[in-house]
Length: 539
Ligand SMILES: CC(=O)SCCNC(=O)CCNC(=O)[C@H](O)C(C)(C)COP(=O)(O)OP(=O)(O)OC[C@H]1O[C@@H](n2cnc3c(N)ncnc32)[C@H](O)[C@@H]1OP(=O)(O)O
Ligand SMILES: O=CC(=O)O
Ligand SMILES: [Mg+2]
Image (cartoon, rainbow, N blue to C red; front, side, top):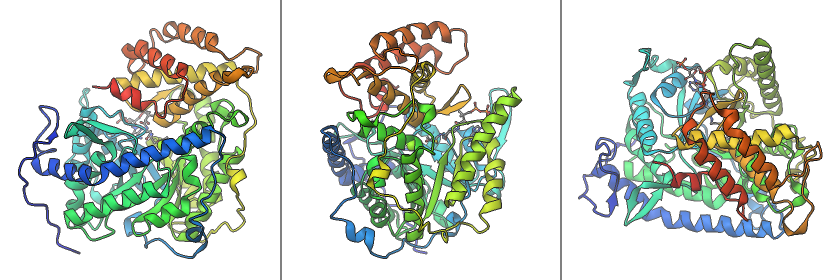
């Protein structure tokens, strides 16, 4: 292994600012210079790629359909494989995910899952405090010193290292800024901040354990965006004196454009990629966004958009086939049901849904799956242990899968009920309120709701309400009610009294959440991410 050398102390760079009171041990002059260097080298490319996303979406809005790229046919058709997997990432049959507060980090690492995805993205509201607390918790977890005492006095400590899950960190996507760190007045990228700071503090300690910074990369839309990550991480390796390829990534295929570039994304990252993951919730959100102006591809209510819908089945099976051809893991995704305390029948029904989902995944050839809650680990593990004898099932090449462009964008059949409409409104309001209050993942009606699941509800409301733009007849609920602003207003007006008295996270921010949802649904254009306008209100 190469010697690992931290950069020499730099001269304080006055171009970089962080909030007064930021703990110096996390963001000293060395760390700030490291981050500013990432910004200087890579932010212009990030911004250019975000502009490319916008022009691609403009073409979809004008009627174009996503498709495989002609110019990259040789990447898809030639034979090559990704770098061999590191030992720590060979068996990933059950991965737990969750936000990065100290209690969650300890519980997740101790949970018995093979891996833990510490999440700065869908399940974290990126307040400055949450980000710094999370970075500190992860650093202490890697050092083995992390401990926590709850307000009620319950003590949490890490299990011995060989009993802990392998740590994988999910930084934010390319679209989000980190407004607290400014370089020449401009905000730095949230992704570069999260991944850069984690690598800066932990790469050496991880290398000493023969691991590396392992990342889950969210919301990519193209191979060029994957190439940017590869260039960033190669630069981080050089700067920190790590061997090339020590930093490993798994990429979430959770946008519709990306499913047409899975080979290209694996190829762009082929010396460091360990797998692809079916991030189904953002994928559904992306399908909605991509086709926001396509009236023939409106999706039914959220509960009907399950993995058995043809477009989702095609995506997950093509992902398995693509990964196994290239020697990469094909990770499954998240069932949103969580345990229900105090109602055995409801709990049994929820667990049956999770079991069916995991069974579908292992049968389709996935090499592992995600759970949102520790109580689901034994269930998922049992299903994978029974059917996946080795550490993975790359030998299941799925040559039977014949998926073409039309399969990946197939319209769905279903309905929109009053419950589906009202449920979307309630989830949006409650989730936005919690997020503004600093909580990025909450249980609502016994389902895990995070930025991806809530975005489906938000995008659907916009699409249904704007169906009648350009003189079309409005959409109707299955009871015949027209879906229009009057309906939304009625549901929103009734919500505060419905929620009153319930102990919901962020209750005080419900009026602000209602105002933001009204604004977002009334806009002529579907906002790219709800977290963009919401972030302006955070901290
Ligand atoms: C679409 C996607 O991006 S999926 C990935 C992002 N989403 C996630 O990661 C979801 C993570 N899950 C969670 O945040 C939580 O499970 C929630 C919010 C859904 C429910 O949390 P709670 O209401 O606290 O659940 P509950 O009360 O049943 O928790 C019981 C215990 O399990 C712990 N726990 C629950 N979920 C997790 C988790 N994901 N990781 C670690 N510990 C957990 C709780 O902290 C609690 O610990 P304690 O007994 O020591 O106090
Ligand atoms: O990140 C996961 C998803 O489903 O979205
Ligand atoms: Mg996601």
